[in-house]
Image (cartoon, rainbow, N blue to C red; front, side, top):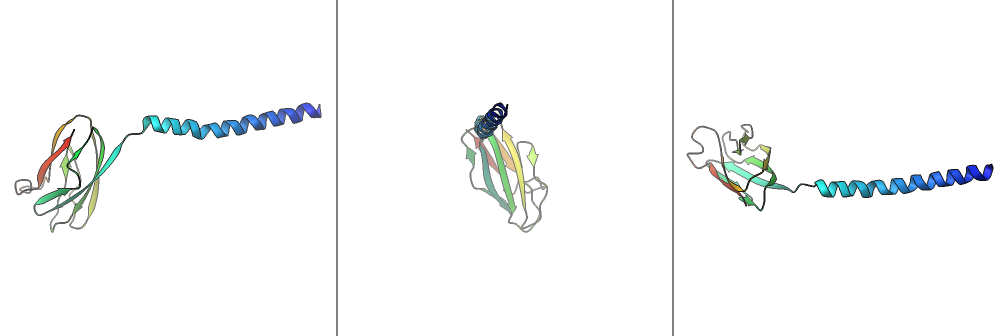
Amino acid sequence: MRQIITRSISTFAAIAITSLALVPIASARGEHQTRVTATTIQVKGGEFFFKLSAKSIAKPGKVTFVFKNVGHVMHDFKINGKKTPLIQPGKTAKLVVTFTTKKKYNYLCTVPGHAAAGMKGVFTVR
């Protein structure tokens, strides 16, 4: 009887250890299949310009725009129907946008007169 219990415990331990070893492999496989390429683009804006670290991405996907107001008055950044709040000079805001279509997207500052003064541009999804 003691031998059967010992064998059962050994078998159970072997199964448990094998199962634990397989969990990270299965998780890694799942992460790889659902991974979405994310891009971060630095945006500096001031009177009256925007400077983007990249003006395009190679394919549709998620982009995080990190907008820093380097000007002396409040500004915001708007693209594809999404915009940051108005931010104070020297402050930064993040804007996450998912682009689903290859095309050109206009961006601008929505403060009256700022886009007309030069705070606008075109971002391309190729």
